[in-house]
Image (cartoon, helix red, strand yellow):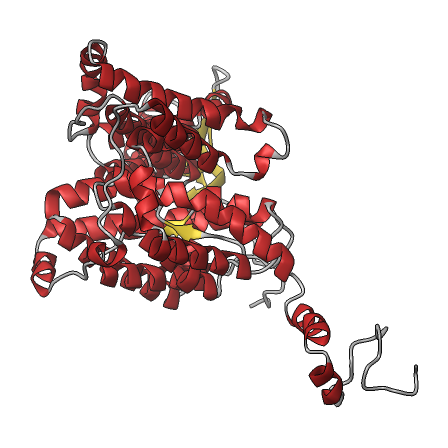
Length: 531
């Protein structure tokens, strides 16, 4: 047996490169070890890609419908996020696609500028992301206040929940965030006497219930992702019971893809469109990079390279803009599902994009069977997870300033708009940080006789100047004063000038002038040569 090398039964080691005759004799057997050696994690990545595909499919469709665009455009963004962004460097296990976090902003942009301009907005957003990544600005997004980002997501979640309750009630949603909240009681009262509206609401409530209870299902059933199970059960219920509810409108993949016409680029001359582009860029970039940081905590593989990830997101958004599709971000739901399903390399996210492409190309009519209230239920569930109720309660107990920034950002987004709400949140975060950085303590020691001792410690900035001067000007003018500044870590120019002026004019004639002890000089960094 061993004297005939061309046909060994089960070789203990991989065949030598020169063993070409063995490969020709039995092509299937040697090919598998060769494929496994090149892609050692292919089996796990293949299984994970199916899980991510099943999670992404209903979310892609739901986000598109909620954004007021054809459902197929959500699939296009998912395909680009999987195949194009998935092939690029940055974060190996993070999955990109249309995100619920941008739904409100996309809806407002389409309503104000029209669907053709959406491609222009997304295209410019992608180009800006590529530029920021090339300039190595990706790491600086980690400096954005977490309270602002969480407040942004909370505001989006509130508007998303309020907006999706209207499709659940078979009603038309008002335009503004406050209008959506104010109109809910009336929409609910109108639905009580409408059988079709009650059927729609029941289907939406059932979808949310399945999503909440799916973790209690048997282990074999949980191999199907919750969102897909909820949509599948809702679709089956509509077919069996003949419920009079709206379903997704289907236009076809090629008919939905509409590159932006040249006339749409004329809007770039207006401040409104430019502001929307900036909002898309900042929010999409921040959400993607914060998602990358969260995904890095879920696995022990290669860490995210933030600048390269920003370029990858930009490349995907540039292509989505050229196709007239939705903007993309990294999506924590899909990314977490990818990691938990056992993915090891970027192969899983690329394959999930391939499955989305095959579905959109071969089974587009299946979309027409999906009930709109079921998609509304999925987005209501997603929006609720964006509102950090427990985290906000804990934050209020520990750092009330951060909790106020979070709440103010969320409420501003609901009351005004996404862009203005984020700007308000950033401004509040800067003011809060500046106020805390200017922490100052003034101690006055007056023994009734002799000089009055005044000691300043902390950071003396112009923000605390009124308090400093009020306290110092209340000191008796007929007594010597010793002002000790040695405890100050920082003394800005405004405070220094004001203290010098106060010391010069404080004492009455014949009184010893104010004695000032200057701040201690800063210690030289270690390794700095002496002068």
